[in-house]
Length: 260
Image 1 (cartoon, rainbow, N blue to C red):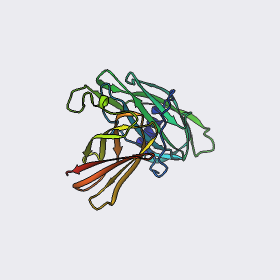
Image 2 (image 1 turned 90 degrees about the vertical axis):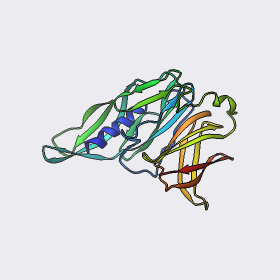
Image 3 (image 1 turned 90 degrees about the horizontal axis):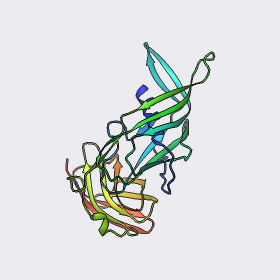
Image 4 (image 1 turned 135 degrees about the vertical axis):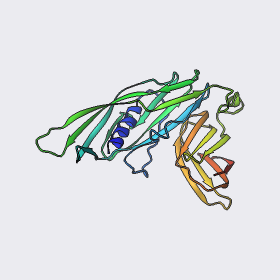
């Protein structure tokens, strides 16, 4: 559908390549065409002067079907490439995996958004992509399609506000793991974890119930130090759970209550 086609271009646009030591890890188990999070979920909020990190995942289909004048038309995708992105909060950068920012059909990829912004506000992103596409008609050659997407945004909340804590990062050793708080959003199915990671590397988050059964697992890229991470696709019934955070041989646990 047209919506999926536009979402696909949006993710690649977010894959701006910057110099950084951090990198995301594509989720090879996710095979739904398009990107996550979508325009409804959008990107998680951040806090003033607190490191921010979140991952977006992509799976590129070979074709996208659109309805035009009552006819189903198949658009075949050969590749999608980033052209430009504007509106990033000062202090934040994007890196992609693959690093080229070019995605071919049936490719898994991801974009890592990270950095620290010192100016609160809402930052809408404007991204432009160029795709090589073709129709399954012998007399129509391959062509290019340019798309501009404006629905992604990053909200940076002021320090001291209801959604931000002041001074917590100063009490955490950047080489030690720690979980400061966990908020479960049962309406949009995600966990917001405020934590400290000892290294910029993939980190495993698991949620287990009161009898030790795993109900959720997600491995995401983190940067070193204090940060806010949004874990998507979390679903659980009301009850008491334990969130486990693991990086290398370091572990941390946090008791979590889910209320629906």
